Image (cartoon, rainbow, N blue to C red; front, side, top):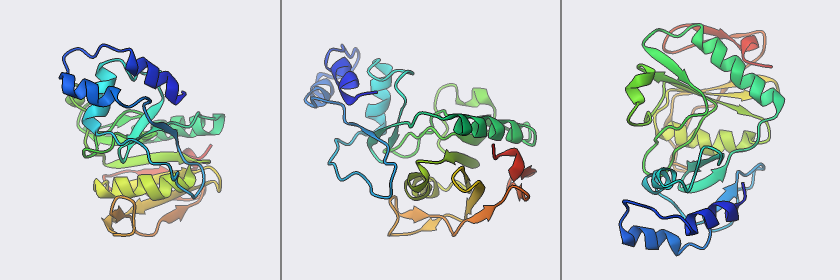
Amino acid sequence: MAAGDVGSRFAGSEVRGFGNAWIQRVRRCRNLNVVRRPQSRKMSAMHERRWTRQEYDRMTEAGVLTENDRVELIGREILTVTPQKSPHATAVSLANEALRAVLAPSMHVRSQLPLAMGDDSEPEPDVAVIRGSIRDYRDAHPRSALLIIEVSDSTLAFDRRVKGSLYARERVAEYWIINLVESVVEIYRDPTEDSSARFGWSYARPNRVTRTESIPLSFGGVVSAADLLP
């Protein structure tokens, strides 16, 4: 999705029900600053327009952003979601299947759906284990998760440093990265404050699990790494 596509859609949209001051504030931005997710260790040095989660949700309600716009809000930046190659899609499906087989009825799995994290982020992780039933979140997105999984290849550095820090800040107890580059699962636990991290929090050094090993879940059950890796 090109930034101009969304920007021009926004410029021509009639945002019903919103105050004129808010509408004019956003329309003064000639483009919706949608940037590509960084795929290297260097973060973009561009000074992007920052958005709150409330503004981001309003754009969805107004039809400025639609289900066809593969984006997520991370640290007030609207980032494009990297297109999925076959190994990535396979790993997402495998993780969903493996977790559903071991979860208690009091939990459920969400895949590539929003989480409302603070005032600055609305990520859509590849897989998340959420407490409660699906209908518990009919009126609002979950604010956290028991476990979040990201499948990573070209976005590995971003998922480690940026998303890892965000999830640690939100006290997500377990964060896994299915590392397709090295064919391992990285297990992150014990979120702690870290002034050097992007969101002021980070996880302890990860435990790298190979295909022959199993992973105990903090909320009960065991998953084999072989069931997660394509």
